[in-house]
Image 1 (cartoon, rainbow, N blue to C red):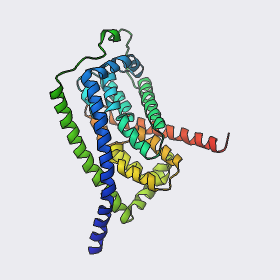
Image 2: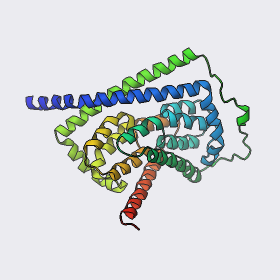
Image 3: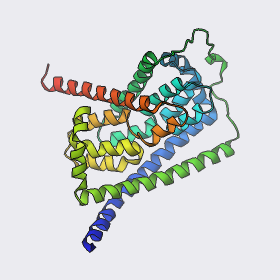
Image 4: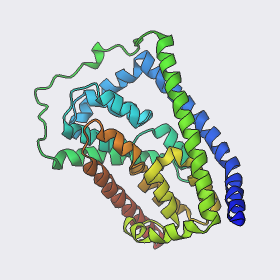
Length: 317
């Protein structure tokens, strides 16, 4: 028992420095991006951008108001998207589509930086997630019943909307943002530290090997390396942001080929955080199984397309 405690606390102590280092990196990048988006929202520029792309969302069966929800989620996080969705009149069908699109491509500035740190191209990560998000919206609009007709819908003319229009008093808005980001950072540091300690303990006692072996059949279906199974579990349960330090550390110290890292990032970029984030979009009316399985199917297709490309490239077809 004494040996168990010694090994446990030894593993926890060894995992702490790298966890705190990654947490500090995450805090800096998240606060910087979040404040930049806050300024865009405060100045009205974010609303102008949303209005500019609103006509595109008819291809996804979504009203123009959904554009602002998507843009908020794309640049900030799922919470921001849901906050907007909760203020507009939108059907269950539309919420399900916007939910699937946003969960495939949200917090792009922060999460793309994390995936880049694991070794994948920033351009590849952003392109895959954005394209997958649009394809999900387009396909779901085709196959889900009761597709809306926008032929008689009037849209706001961009020329009628000021590019720069202050959205309220700065200090109250800043205080709300500061409170939100402070709570988020506290949560993020706590989860990152806890996950790294858990990871260190699992490695110390050899439990990680059994987890990887148990998940091997699923990895085969998704076209991923079995060595990626623990990272896949972390990404699906807690997401990219909270699992960042483990993912970066594992990618840097493991013998994974860059191809395997790219395949993993293509998959989890489209489908991750299938507990917390999925629950969030369900609270505003999204159908959970459509949001979940549509992204799993999309990520599976993307990975096998990548695998076919790598095969043809290696054999010079």
